[in-house]
Length: 418
Image 1 (spheres, helix red, strand yellow):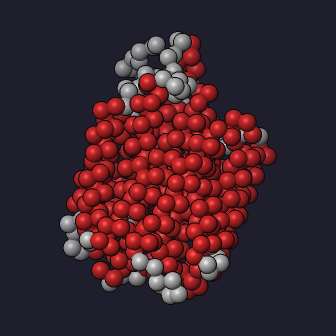
Image 2: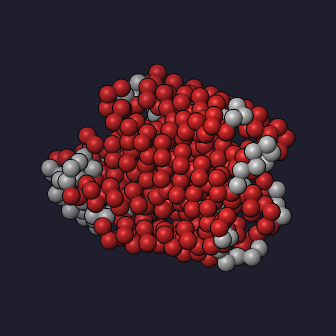
Image 3: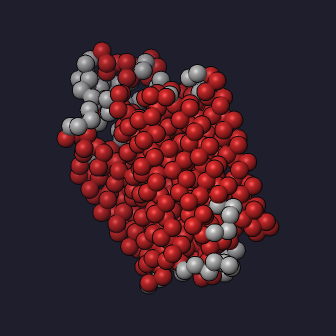
């Protein structure tokens, strides 16, 4: 294994790190080994904590509306500000991890996010809540893109798609856990206790992550010089496939967050009048994502990324249309299909980034997730206007448009045969 030199020239950066390590007979982490299990458990826990912290407010948006006297669209800002600041932070933390390493950035970021969440439970003004949520999202930017990059560098290329799927499944279970715990604990105690409990769980996950994640073996520090960053930035946007994948992340995440932002308002209102606990329990649909994401990763080895991405997006659209029916059980089935399709599509698209980016992989992953979380912030808040004016019919129409565009982008990726 080759050890990195502290001095890195621009020519070194242009060379593909994967190609360099291959010539030195790198020791990849392979499936079935103890190292693979440690990486899987560590990144799974990081993904779980990240999504739990990010989305714990989603099922209690109606409660926050009542507590602070804000509208549904204003209440959704508590989520949008976190995802928006996370998107901006990704533009910094990805390149930063390219320069100083992966593990330290992830551990520090996760701990800061946990502390900010604990502080948010003590806030008594809406502005204070938004500030802590913004800092939480900014901190979590140091986990999202860096985790994807770590896997693409350290895991054997033959199982990167599978390991990426496992990482995404941690995201899905984290999203479920955060929503479920916040919904149930809010019903039993208060939203403050619910948020504090999730912050404590995330802090424990951060400590375990720091303890068991193996150090990077194939990381080579890159320069943080503005000229180098701009060269890499331009190359990513000139690539035949990366800009399309960035657009796909925007559309998929925008559709996903919009549905889950406003499904609670629908089910708490007439004619359903479901309790906060039941609405929180509906988050079990995230378990379909923990199954579909590694499954999609395995299917790409047989069918290719393009067909799997299109199929997963079509599954999202099918699930969405089913939620237009009034029966609760059909709404639940639609949510299951929609969620399974989303996590499968995200697993394929995020895994695709690592293979497309020939250099500065951390920056490429950051740009994908920047688009991904900008989609969450923009569409998630804009959906509130559709909900206010047109109800669930407006939400269905809005999300359908996003998914149709996502299908067109996926078809373009398939036609390019990337």
